[in-house]
Image (cartoon, rainbow, N blue to C red; front, side, top):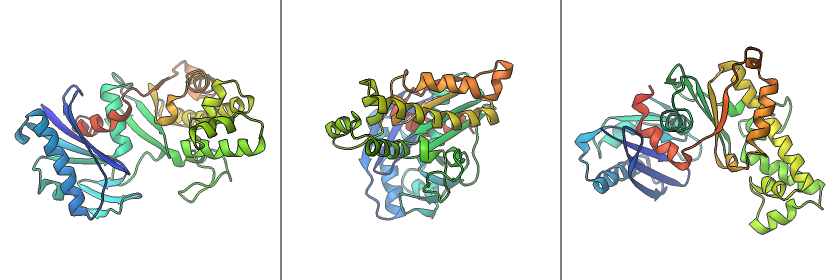
Length: 313
């Protein structure tokens, strides 16, 4: 059986033809050049047709096409997206005018969680969480062997407050987890540390890369810079606060950390994260500590998860 998975990003669109076992047989990419909803749907359908042609598979052999959307969806409709001007768009109906296969829509973070659950770091679990550390903090929840989803946006884990009255968040609140644990939050804290410590190696690393990035603190810490090491410890403490909250509420078997920040060395990220969570999470009292691991599928998680959505709902 074959499935089409489409991952809608803020700058690029990607589609893949995926087998039942998660193997990607063909991939097609194109820059996002939004004109209107109809053109957008046509472009997505053309990507789907392209991967079918590459693999020599007829549309009649496709079980379904899944589309991961960076925003809120319900049924076959896009309710709202922040970075693409789409609101109340019947995307499934528009898509099927150009490629007539069953269509499933889901939030893009949820698609990544499905991909990791079925084919990556969450294989074999019934309770599984994916946390993605990028521009924001995304989350996808697998509960009792099913994707936790619903009408609109669910699982907005980045917007629980971990620092009352803290840094402002784009959502309008202050002290959200996203304001501290995202790459954006890490960049803000790096700039603050650089201002406070002009002698720090952070300045050299940032100059070498041309700007301050999410990896700047970790790159300087690898070289032994004390300011960067302290910054990384602070960052991990904020990350651990949110992960611990999720574990206390949901008691998953595993938590996978993904996104650009997750590429940091284990000794600076995952190892101290595990130590803090083990020390602070409530399940320690019963010896039911979850595994905290790095997500495995990288940029393929969204395509695979979107393609295999039918197996998770």
